[in-house]
Image (spheres, rainbow, N blue to C red):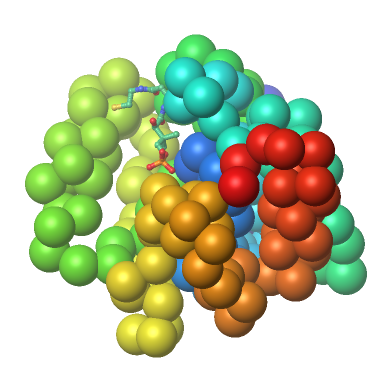
Length: 171
Ligand code: PNS
């Protein structure tokens, strides 16, 4: 237990758009869940103008993927990430770093978040190297152009993507 109001050193937030969740995200979330007692995967509401999945759908998909992991919760958030993390009493924000190209954006966000809330630390983790080229944007593009995404996203995500395609959305 921590004093009232103090962040829990055992709780981390893994925030993102997750449109859709990729195997790279899964890798980072599982690494976080091994390091922290509890992890909240926080889905940003309305990140994209034309998302493939609504934030409710993304939350449902990610819950399905991690249903066997009692220490991984999934939630949606809007507004400032640090405000959400503060409300959850999280001590850390975890982000994946795939390549040097991610660094500048992540560095800016981490320092801005620290400026806004100095008690919450941002941690970076590298995914397994076979996932370093994966991004949600590329997955969406490949899928919409008829390419194979098996092995790049969890089977549940692929199923949801095919269901969208069946509805004439996203492919
Ligand atoms: O998966 P993404 O799109 O790279 O995730 C970006 C995310 C959700 C982490 C970032 O956009 C975010 O934290 N948005 C919430 C708004 C906010 O706090 N902005 C200031 C961050 S410096």
